[in-house]
Image (cartoon, rainbow, N blue to C red; front, side, top):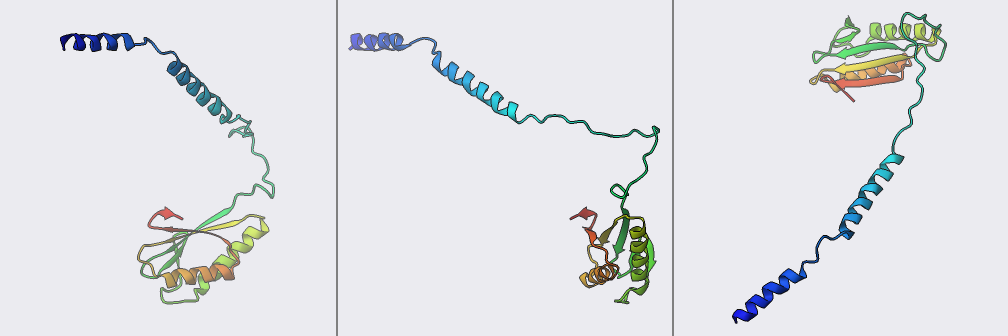
Length: 155
């Protein structure tokens, strides 16, 4: 029995085949494949034509006229403000002064070939009905670029 135990121990030592190179080659090929694939994903840098301040300002053409940005706030009390100026009463559904001001701003922007961009910032507890009143006024003024924010987060 003692002879059999010793024989097993010798077989285990003889089975050790030494350093295996095949798994190392596989690892090297996988790493090489990774870098080859990632090399294809590298973006080529392109020139950005920018003009630094102080070097002269180019005349604005029709394509790069800056848009008119307007902030409309709808408070939970129903008060509607345009760039922090209050319009109409909180119970007026038609909002005539607000609508007329929007129409005037839209016409002025059209004469300058500029876009009108409106951001509606509604308080979290503002009534949806009041937001719809504001949207109706914008439809009458033919303003289409509208962004909504609620509680400071843009959608």
